[in-house]
Image (tube, rainbow, N blue to C red):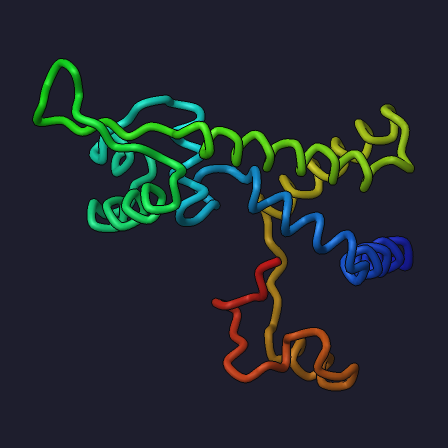
Length: 182
């Protein structure tokens, strides 16, 4: 690793140590991440927001989760007043699930919050700099996707121990399979 790449990695590390940045990144990914990465109730709400009325089977197919999981999620969302279930006008055997006004408002509010957060986070960059950063981050991500570095987790644990427990690599049970998710 060259000195320049080490400096870049250190800058990334400093960025990830900024509480506001980490909160923004976590909050943003929970509000508007790809459906395959979202979990639980928000995943169902987002699907309904984009697709409209759906059946349990439609949700099972779209999200690739078990029917029992969909039933539990839908029940919780209905109890929270975020969705309704009503029989289909054309086929009484089919129950259609849709967002309530409260559910639509929740989705709209989450998008507004994400917009405010991203605007505040990147306010110090002009449009050109934001586009350049986006392109560089896409390139970096594609490179990592194509060839992830071979990392020895024991080396990370030894190094983390020297720096104290704040890094998470020295937590009990930390293995390559359960990297910290931010």
